Image (cartoon, rainbow, N blue to C red; front, side, top):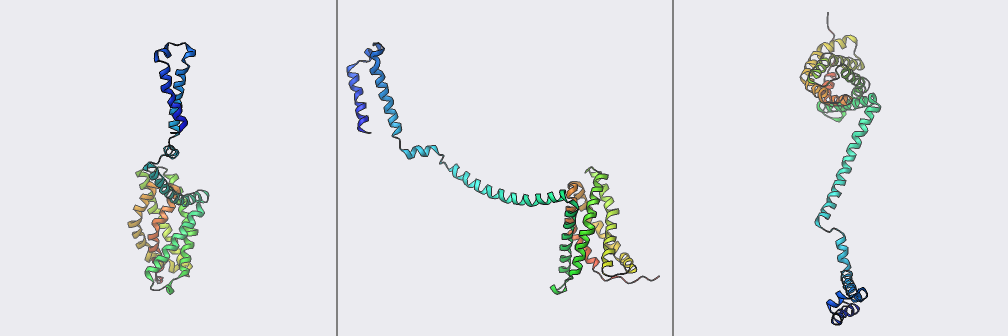
Length: 271
């Protein structure tokens, strides 16, 4: 405590000796000045005590230095990093969905070409023994088929199914599956085998022979593979994403299809 404050507090006993408490209460308003003076001195003393409170402790009270402050800081840092990763992932997915809406046929066609390319390379990896035996021309044929034939056809087929059976209930899903297995699947299998054989230089008779040999076993394998895939696609997936999901399912199927298409050409049938 400073000397000035001590002198001010020392005047309080002298005033009490000079004036009694009853005199101060009974005195008229001008005579009550000493009482107001006492109250002022007390308030100044309390103000001093508050102002004399260490500065750094007052600053500490202004900020919350509890452990929750540090935990919230660390949690906000980790959440910001996870949010950035999620934003990146959402950005890629959002870009693809935007391309599907803006350029649906092109996007689905390129997607089919990429999947057919990956499937053919996987098929050749399984069958071949060395990198020198890779047939890049075969891979280009598969990519061209996915780009020019399968991708556009999937777009129009799924849109047609959604207009013909707009609901996604169980009955509508079963109808779509039946039409897929009865119309679209066999048609595209014939187109795939015929076009691929023609690009390899096979004649019409040889293409017919290949179809007689390979078409039925391929359709039988498709009946065992595609119904579950079609059920998931038609039942739970929006129509604008159905080609993407179907292409994803077709990866394993395309590995099998490219293997079948790479078989030696069948001999000509004799009449």
